[in-house]
Image 1 (cartoon, rainbow, N blue to C red):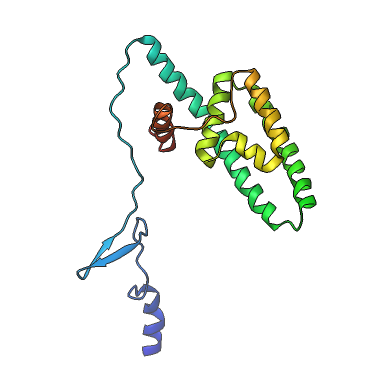
Image 2 (cartoon, helix red, strand yellow):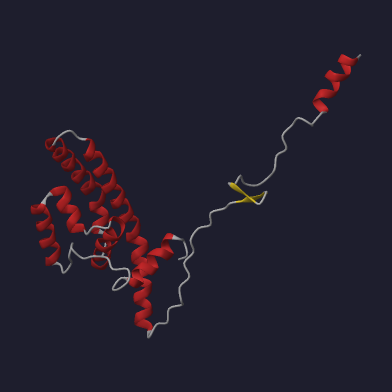
Length: 192
């Protein structure tokens, strides 16, 4: 009889079941004997509202926002490709293998980005040069020189100069590019 009662009642016993709580698992810390949830909040940037002198200045700002939204993802992709290429080059045994890999990467990048680059305006192209510097902490000229040599770097710099651009242009978030930095930070955080 006892065996019958145990077998019959066991599905109805809930003392050993885990209770499900709707919510999130979060890290915790113990402070003075209390368990406190520890949640990492994202950085939120708060800027003073912009005051435009005229309609033209307002339009230029919104053009910058549009250009950053279009070009910033490309600069991040380029930076990731640079990092991956550099790390892989470190594993190659000799200079010949490195040069062969660089040619393969150059061809792949041209295939991947030529169509997208042709769709960029001149202003977007200049912005891309600066944002690549921002992402990698090296000018585009320095990157080309490091991977492809000084001759190709000089060639691309001369070609860019024909159109009024410069691969040696550095990103200056505290000076000339202060407004661009503001827009980039807001785009990164999904604020605009």
